[in-house]
Amino acid sequence: MEFEGKLAIVTGAASGIGLAVTRLLVQRGARVAACDLALDGLNALSAELGAAIVPLQADLAESAQVEPMVAEAIEKLGGLNILINNAGIGSLARATDLSFEEWRKVMAVDLDAVFLASRAAMPALAATKGNIVCTGSISGIAADYSFPAYNAAKAGLLGLVRNLAIDYARDDVRVNAVSPGYTATPLTNRSSQAVRDAFIAAVPMRRPAAPEEIAEVIAFMASDRASYVTGQNFVADGGISAHTGQPDIIALYKSARQAS
Image (tube, rainbow, N blue to C red; front, side, top):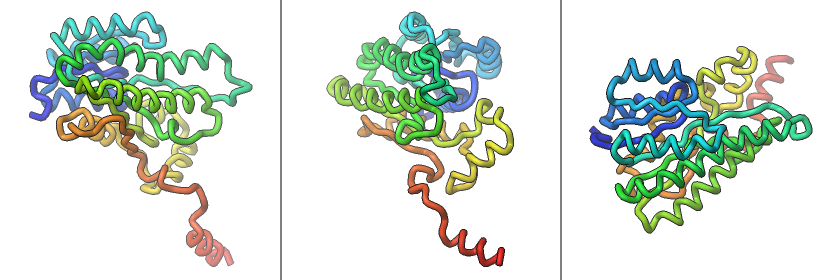
């Protein structure tokens, strides 16, 4: 199996993309330290995957918990080959309506925790010629209305990925990002049908990604198949970022003819 004998940490492992990644790594032979704040989710994951999982509860918004989590994971796993920095949160408000406390919370989870976890894991990864994959977002390569903290954090994450990649290439540690577009997760599925339909309408493929589809891309980047790939951001967004944002002119013409 592709990840037979590999040891991994996945943050945000109890739901959404993190859950799909954890399942996929275990299915392909890895043992995973699954980190999440949601204890119920971790318990369910342990019941499902058994001894292949080391459950670790941590609040990555609390910076003091990040490095101890990584140290505990490495100790319990007996080493480390792969770090998946996946945990993330967002906030919805224009900058003038966004409190500094909310700004800092988003930064703490989406960027600070990535820095702290990567820094703490680096010696163990250098020892195994391992790699880091960070879950970015298309929100890190362009702007969304009323997402200043999330946009800034995900853009910063991509800069950090590039820096870590070149600084630690000499240590044979690869560092990459995968940036999903609209994905059907428990979080996005809480939106109204009208909101979900509006997001889907913006996707050229006219559907959201399944978490398992994004997990496959993350697994590829974490695998030996990507052994010469570092410092890259792999976008998996159903074509959103390929579009200028301008309207489909032929569709408009057809609609106008039908209306007349």
